[in-house]
Length: 283
Image 1 (tube, rainbow, N blue to C red):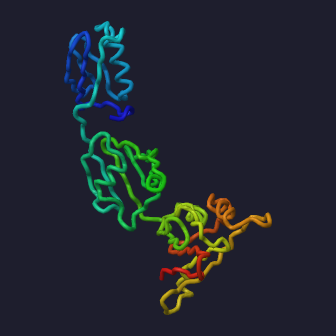
Image 2 (spheres, rainbow, N blue to C red; image 1 turned 90 degrees about the vertical axis):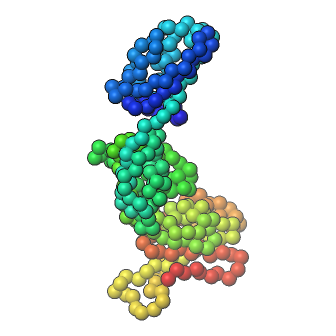
Image 3 (tube, rainbow, N blue to C red; image 1 turned 45 degrees about the vertical axis):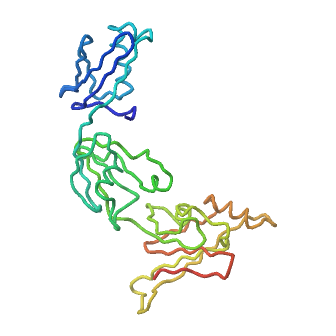
């Protein structure tokens, strides 16, 4: 049980006391947020974290059992049975609807229950609403690319997880670590796309990056690939005599990649220096 879990009415606690005295108490949190411990009395525990609950128990048990204060009597409290919350997962998910989830379930748990976002679902701006107010947003790339779960909040009764329609997507192929199709947040550029793709491979050509862009509808003509090519020159370090590897390190940090705006459907190609430059184009 995470130490920041908050006790609420309906939770069932198991209190174990060992040492000078031996007891096991099954304690159910009432609707008013109380538990009653024999010989200790009534304690208000609603909305306390597990750490705060243990501190309260140490104080109250210590008044009755001196061994708790001296260390000859130990106690432990755990959650025997969690309540369930009804949460709603809506928007661009595979199976939108209402779900009964445990009280420690998070946004990722709810998405798993709903079988994840659809292909047109947004991965960068998932919204959590509580009592009609937006309380947080989750960027799935933080979790998928960096393992960051800081915005994977614990859900409460009646919370709504909303997955909107996707934003701008661009494909990157060639000499990058993770070639794939990525969704971009508002304001993100070519440098951000290369960063999401893990940066350049060691054999990447550092002279230019090609962006294959769909032509506006008025300029399209019948054909397999109505695209234009935007050639982005990569600025190399000014100091003479630097080798290609040092340039790769500069560019890998994202600092020296021009912040060129991308459009939906763009296909970025990073050529390799190990052979003839060949562009992978998605029609």
